[in-house]
Length: 376
Image 1 (cartoon, rainbow, N blue to C red):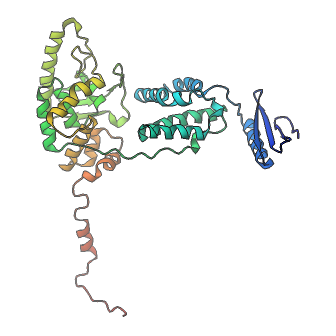
Image 2: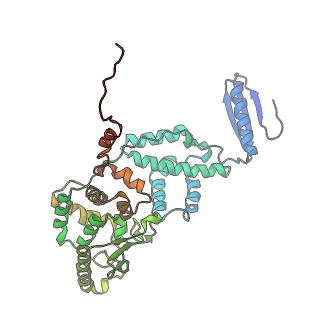
Image 3: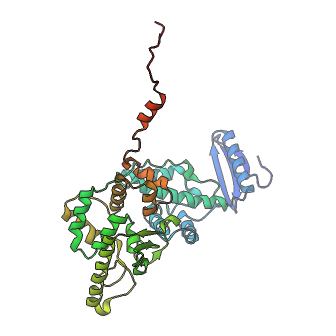
């Protein structure tokens, strides 16, 4: 039976099935069901979406993402944008890139995510990929290219918390003793003493040190690709740390070591005013630092197999277990809120409940206990 313009049509085929059709941008879309009520509901929903501006999408998901990602460049941090780009290229395009945007279904996305988990891809990674696709499709809904975000109906995997590792004071001391002759000893020393992040350390410049006031300002970080410097994640990440005599001495020794390296490199040296560099003065690459310097030292020191980021956990653990207030540790680490520090390291704060039971006993225990005559 024909309907008024824009409402589509509904008819019954000779085999008894009901068909609803609507036209979107000159292309006909259909819904087939044994039940007339099903196709009626579908037609009603589609015509309502058309009235709201839904136009349909003939392009593939890959083509859409090629347009969507550059539009996010000015609103995302450099490292976040690079992460989006990597995850789209590695996890979304190979399996879903050729699917037409309007043909994408929750079942298909669910199948791909489940397949990744079965193949050993980490749950945290799949969740990141899901969130990227969800954000991209949200934009397509707002612009009328699709009428709903199918990822709303997709179940994300449950990510288990990664076990936090940190060195004991004795292990940290042994690690730094082992690293003493390394050309990057000062970097490892700062990592343990200040808890600074790896890419924050790689972004430090000599101008960040105030030798008179004995402070170190953390103002930027090196991008993971190691070619550009970016701003820090939050306002609190920008911080100035007061340093002690031992740390200033370590930095002074590193300054002298670097002067010798600059002289040996001669014309090959590329000056960037960086505190920690390659042997030719260029920014220190993430993989080079990790594989060439850090992991061999961990193995040589015979300490637990830790990540570089665990040096940050080590700094926090040592400060907190030695009585430094969480608010102070939070500022040193550059956390956005002290609650973040408490959530991550709260179990390390000594005596958090010390005296609480004793206090309650003192407040509610009568001076003389009276036996109650309870009914038998």
